[in-house]
Image (cartoon, rainbow, N blue to C red):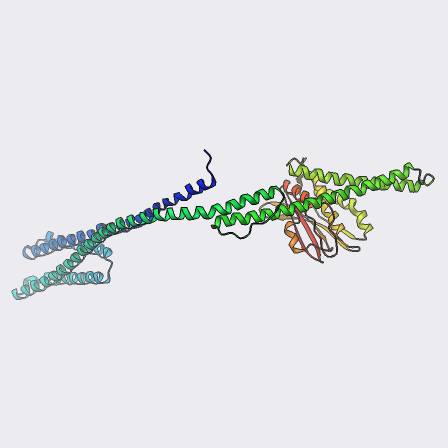
Length: 484
């Protein structure tokens, strides 16, 4: 079953209800929050309570060993006392790492200070115990009990706070769960309502511009290249309309260029054919029968016009092959220098006739290239011919080469002239097919296919071609070919 655009868009926008899935993000965040609270309650608060219980037991054991030693003077109780001290310090350090508030940290510092006083008091007590009076002994017990009570009170306060924090976090978790359930119901209801409303209005706003696009497409089929005026529509349809307008303008431009191309080709074919016909007629009528020099000149004209005709036809054939992706290439390892020199020699008579200084800068040693020699020669002759064509008398054209190292190694060929130059607005499209540039001093010449074919040949060799130009200052056409 084929769905109309309206049905497809309706089904697509009905999927907006899937926005409910985004509720999962909210739930996930809240679950993470609950997880953090639960983890803190289990790993921090519960661990704090457990560590405090351990400290109570440790302190109780140490006091017990202390009293047993003072009564029995058994060395084992003395050693056990100091072993317990090490455990107490480890436990108090672990407790300190679990506490997060400054108040709790200060309370731990007080516990450590009281405990240190207790140890110092014990050490002072065991020195010369036999010589000390009963009064001093009871004074020691009173001071010790005060210190132990202080430690117990601080530990109880820490435990009370830890238990309170744990209970608060459990309560907060319960509140979050309740809020999540309420929010989930609200969001689901709003998402369904919003999905229906958005689906209705968006579908209605899309159908109108789509129908307009359909009508304009029919106009293009009838060669009526009219733009779509501003329409009220979603951004996606607006972008589609803008692309449609650009396509319409491009098709109109191509249609005009094709028409211009047909006229230009007709002129380029008619001119040499007319010259050949007139020269042949004169020879057949016996004109200059007794003047072999003039007869030879007529034959020379015929030969030159035939060459022009063949060149135009070959260019059209190359364009057809290029469009069909059927242009043939015969790649071989070749040196570019002889090929450039041959092209320069071939076009040197044109330079002499226009009194243009044609200079080939010594290229030096260039690496071998995997190229189609005939096609690259076509590129050179096209670029060099254009440079000579658009350079005034007594101007200058320079050919230079260089080896460039970027990601890959390339040989770069540049053809510089001081001719009329190319307007800036035409630089981006100069290599497009049927593109013919005009300026204030030179009328457009040629079929508009030469540079397009040239770019295709260079690209087929894995290279690039570009141009730099300023009106009245000349142009630099460059292309690069990868080294083997």
